[in-house]
Each structure stands twice: as C-alpha cells, then as structure tokens.
Length: 176
Image 1: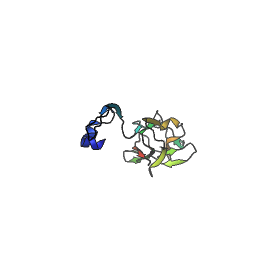
Image 2 (image 1 turned 90 degrees about the horizontal axis):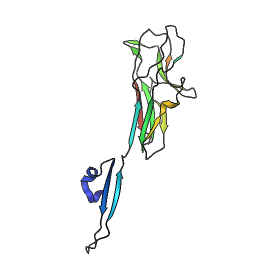
Image 3 (image 1 turned 135 degrees about the vertical axis):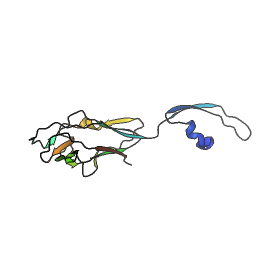
Image 4 (image 1 turned 180 degrees about the vertical axis):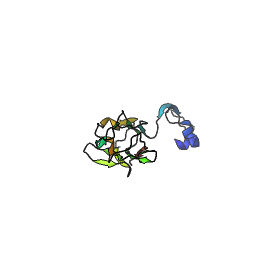
C-alpha cells in the first residue's frame, strides 16, 4: 500500500487513528471491480515506559538505632507500561549524602529469597517481562514488595542527624 500512496503514507495513516479506505481495481481493458471499503485502525507501533513515585522516603531513626535495614516510609510505587515490547527493569542510585556528609549505609534491593544487591555499585536488574502484548499493559513492580523486600536502606554505622538524599535511577529497556 505504501508504494501506491508514496511518501505521504504516515501523514495519512497517523498512529492511533481510524481510516476508511475504498478500493476499486481497474485492469488494462478499463474493466472495474466492485468497490470495497475497509476500516483501518492504525495502532501505535510500540511503547515502553517506567513510572516511579517522585520520593522514596525511609523510616526515621534515632541516633543509636541498631536496625540493619530501614524500611520504606511511604507508598512508593514503580511500574512499567508496555505495548508490543518485552522488557527488563533495573535500578541504581547515587551516594546518599547530607551536604558533604555521607550516610553510613547504602541503598540496597532485597529480593524475596533474601538476596541483597548494592544499588550504588552497579545497575541491578529487578524485573522482566518476555510476554509481548497487543494491548497496553501496566505491570506494578512494587505491589509484590513487603516491608522487608524491595528497595531498603542498609545502615553500616551511625550517621549524623539530618535529612540525607540521593538519586535513584530506574532503567527500562527492550529485552530483545
């Protein structure tokens, strides 16, 4: 069809539109066929997006807290929306600081089986989906996290009082 329409193909058939096409064939003797009308739903080709809550807060601690892991404080959510795209989700983080003072600990990702990954040393894969769907599908990764799994703050010593911050980066890539 593109060879008949030429360079205007994508101008006529824009993504997420419905187009009616009427077709009549004429042979070399000028004999015409019946006219047939088709409805064409132009779908989006592919889509892949990660959506994460803006803030990832952890429980407050007192100066002499001996908790190894600090739990998430809020209803943090991360999800992947895909269309015709298998995907892999990974995460990493910057150092956690208060000004020039480092937090005595690291952000980790803890799986259900107890495996713990340091998110400051590398990009860690945490979820994937190999199912390709013709429907827009949103997978909420955080729905399976408990108080003791998912992103947690691991203390390695006593930290100076105050509010610490860092940057968490979520990566979603096509897994093919």
